[in-house]
Image (cartoon, rainbow, N blue to C red):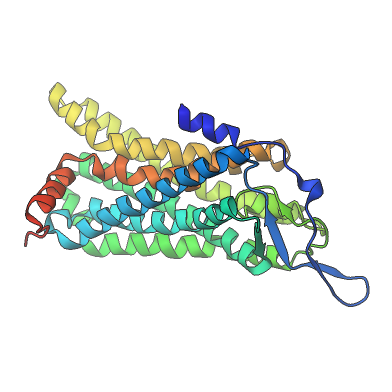
Length: 337
């Protein structure tokens, strides 16, 4: 509760009216924004150092936890399984996901210069959205992996072979990068000639589009449609997978067998709840009904806290992983071949 209270205090009244607009003069009376100002969180000066230290610690721990997963998967044959192959891809994604927002946020917390270039803002928005899509795809594929492991155990190695796993991951990466190319290009074509203060801690598409001088209804509908399609389709696949998993587990005669089967899905289900819950709140609803201050808090959970928690929820609390880490620290040799 202390951390949540601290974060809650970070939200204050925005001073958008006092922000200066950075523009360049074009032909005639044409003006164009050349940079944006990220308002971020309005902080009490006494809290600024504490909040900076908190998010720096979260960022460093996230990098450490996700790098541990990647290293173990690459170096130890015991983790050369489909589940850990997917986890290592998710860990690699989470490193880039959290790095797309947190470093700039940390700089803004300790400097008076909160500006970001026009191109930099568009790129940050695109990579945040693309990697968010990839996260949904990977979480859905991991639910399918759990379905096959529990409901089709005798065919698991046949279905989840190396080729199929690689193809599924390629689909996640390529699909994520392609999803938001068109709307990002359309944002790039918008006219920004007025205020340049983005009411967010990063270049979120909803906060950015609101600053445009040109009509944005079609673009907002496109963002809404793509986000809804990605989130709801992957959520449906996850729900169907878990429905079959629950039915199969309930048919297991022994209580210990049911408990063991449920435990293999508990970590994934926790992440599913956080990832889908936060993003449905942010994107799958009309823009008019959204409070940007509340949206910033949920975006913080999705883009910062989730990549931080994933390695601990999935792997670092896993007995098998902890045993290997203890062996590494005691003997200094992680690899078994």
